[in-house]
Amino acid sequence: MKAITTMRRYFRILLCLFKFRLSNQMIYRASFWTVFCVDLSMFLIQLAVFSALFLNVESINGWNKYQMIFFVGTFNLVDSTNMFLFFFGVISIPLKIREGKLDIYLTKPINTLFWMSLENIDISSCMLFVPGSIMLGYAAAKLGIKLTLGNISGYFLLLALMLLLLYNLMLILRTLSFWFIKTDALHSLEGELIGFCFRVPGIVYTGIAKLVLYVLLPYALLATIPTQFFTGILSGGQWLLVILVTLGFTILAQTLWRLGLKNYTSASS
Image 1 (cartoon, helix red, strand yellow):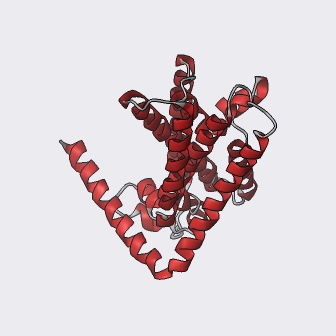
Image 2 (tube, one colour):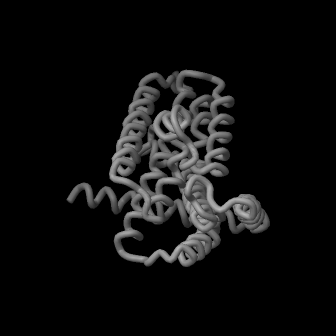
Image 3 (cartoon, helix red, strand yellow):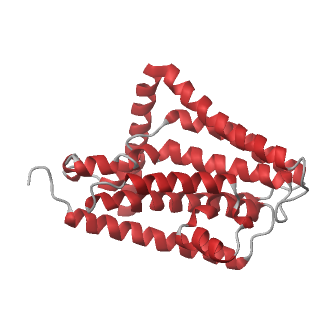
């Protein structure tokens, strides 16, 4: 009963944050639509790149044109949900640590990480759900995939796991600010890895590259695994890999966060 009450409380807080951010962003409507148009352009460019490639080849390591379109649509959903929910909150954590603003969050009767992660919800990013969904529907129709409760539920379960994994990967890098003043180089590396894995699906990797991008720096899982599941080529071993990798990085992120808080010297100290 207590857990249900807590969940309801946090849901109400999340709803309040959403309403506040919506009213705030509507003040600057031009900026709202500019962000949407820029993000949409990036995905359309990537879609055009894959379309150009398939003018000359039949498949890429077994994936045809429509599987690639499904991959782009999946990455669209993962990235837009990330931008909508926690991206701008998580990337602000290092600055709050360095400037001592974390003190304010620690004194409030709410989970510090929850508040910091979700306080900067970006409403414009949720608009990208529409083109992403269109890509998925178009690709699924061309692939002749029959929609069932099983494949829809499994797909969204994997999307949720990939979002959790992405959140933990982002958080791990930002918690390093408890110990290091400058972590900008790592953040740049993160951006390059995400961009690279958006352009190159995980099915092309083998050997050491696959170990690195599936286990050690598992950005290649983000859109590849849900796409593999929905198109019927995800094995039981890959399900186990996803669960173990996500669980491992969740534990690591939470452990580093707790250690960082113990190491944190407040602005008033």
